Image 1 (cartoon, helix red, strand yellow):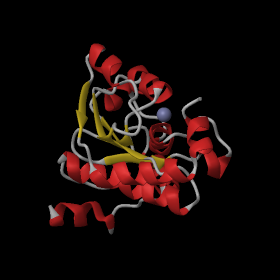
Image 2 (cartoon, rainbow, N blue to C red):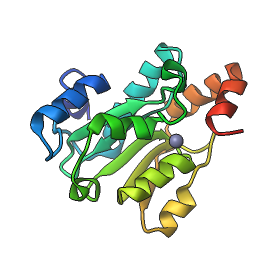
Image 3 (cartoon, rainbow, N blue to C red):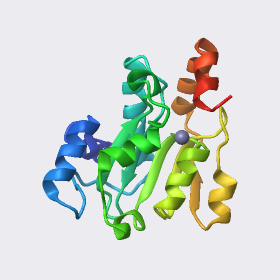
Image 4 (tube, helix red, strand yellow):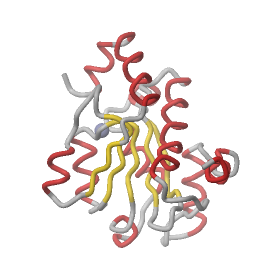
Length: 186
Ligand SMILES: [Zn+2]
């Protein structure tokens, strides 16, 4: 696992979504394969968690996500930027999709969306729109999104119940209840 994480690395892979976007653009329409990694779900969750921590450090909502190809390549990673960009649509998952850029349908259909938090209705819709067949979720204790609907539409949903994902959100919601309610449309 340590080696895998180093490969992920969180040293060798860019965690800045803008650099991922540039890599994606540079590699053309076949998709920006910027690094290789194990398909181990805990390891891929680390990519999303790095994004969540980055969002928190920016003063944002600590939710991160990554779109991962079937060969383990990170196609794009992103985090919730509601606060940072004043954006109502840049959630972790949609920011990761944006970072991945335009991809052929077959790439989405062979990918996994990894997210630190259960996907909301908007992100559930994006996953279904692009027919992403697999979703890995860090936690769903602080917010339960469209998991049942995803499963009903044939999407494989894996919930890892990750302790850090839980406390990142619990701490944030306790400190910023109004901001959190705004993010989930309440
Ligand atoms: Zn969302």
